[in-house]
Image 1 (cartoon, rainbow, N blue to C red):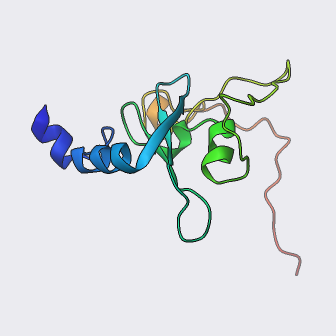
Image 2 (tube, rainbow, N blue to C red; image 1 turned 45 degrees about the vertical axis):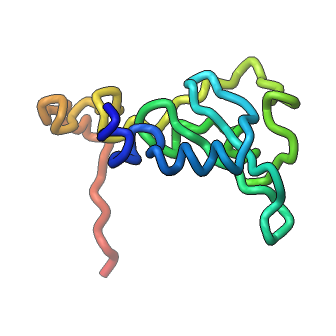
Length: 131
């Protein structure tokens, strides 16, 4: 477990990153997936404090919800723990990019579903360039 923490950055954060963030940053909040968000205690040279995310599991940027993404990129000054997004009734919950995983979308006819699809119904005309 310790060797995994030392050498793999894709399963959370390395020990070096955890030490550095723990020394220079403070915990701001956590999202529903367990990702933790940190902000530098004092501002950087450009006047804005650095912000980090430590992923709970695989480091995949699409796992960051929209409200936290806006905070990380200084679009919002206050974190979602202080001023949460107002969600609309029609909004779906955040879902990370599932491409390349078991949960990826595989339409009928794709190679992962056997590669067979229904024949064209006759309403399709192939494009041909005009002479």
